[in-house]
Image (cartoon, rainbow, N blue to C red; front, side, top):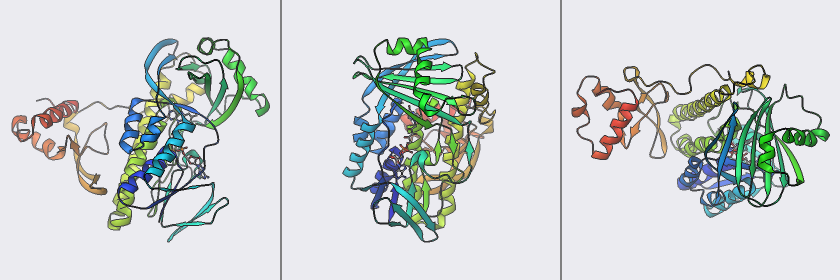
Length: 429
Ligand code: FAD
């Protein structure tokens, strides 16, 4: 029996993928304990559609033009979609029900794992026994050792009711952190302040709400955004938002996905995107571990490398965004974040002569398999196909043969896409 813990986007995407491969799936989850609003890009909506999470997608219908104030400059950035998490989470449950996933409502207390399987103790229920376990409890999943951690960060979410108005969202950098703010047409308001745990000097719990209010009132942008209407029923919820990469994300009969595998800094607005990325590849990894155990090491390598690569990519993009803020170079919040995780570039320059061809794990017909891929500076795990065409044999031939001959057998559309990819890799015809 396969048991998934956690009904967030990651757990739900794995459950649906496993159902498509014909596996019966049991999922155990409790509901989230607070009502957040999160912003996602159109890419997330596409990924949700791709994962078959249509009911959850239907809840993400609030487009908002995001205002950004960073390094003293104001601009209206692209559209983000505001996702009401309670509604979104209900949509995920509905998707699970429609896919025939058995969902147990309850809090997982402990998981005991040995060579034969897992014993899952659930509050108020009988112990569940699983042959294979998918850990998708998000940031609440028990840690598996130290892993890689970014600067310790906490986000204080304030939520209150104001007068109904229009939907809007904004981001603002502050001397000791940054704030994301959003307003829904029904008057629900959100202000989320993200600070450095070590240096923020936050007061005790009893004073925290007042302290947040003072900080909000000290920001001209927040004042203009929320207006002067009274704040009714203000709630505070603190969430850890430290970037965390779990040291091991795949065993012989378990896998971690979503935030349980890697949780990114909320600045990127990419949490749901990355949680879906690791979840969408998991069903093929699980299928391989269960049905082709001779490929265990390959399947584990596939999942581990992809999770690590995704984590570092987001971490470096985040670092560059923090480095764009130049006004408070001496402040601990900015100092710590503009140089983590390392100094490597987020996007490496293309260099056709430096492309390498290697055998690497790929996904083929619902399993992890091995194939020749093209390793580029920007895609160190390799590219296998472009528009259905294997690129490794083409790149090898292009080193000695003219492009017209190498690309001769492709259809017009394939030729166009492959040429465009080659140019992007620095190929000079
Ligand atoms: P989750 O969505 O966390 O789901 C885990 C599920 O497991 C939940 O249903 C939970 O109730 C359940 N669970 C946990 N423990 C137990 C237990 N013991 N027993 C039973 N069930 C349990 N992402 C964005 O895309 N845009 C944003 O604007 C954004 N803002 C964020 C702001 C903050 C402050 C933080 C911390 C994160 C933000 N994220 C954002 C990230 C996003 O919330 C996560 O990346 C995403 O929800 C991860 O999905 P998941 O399925 O891995 O885990």
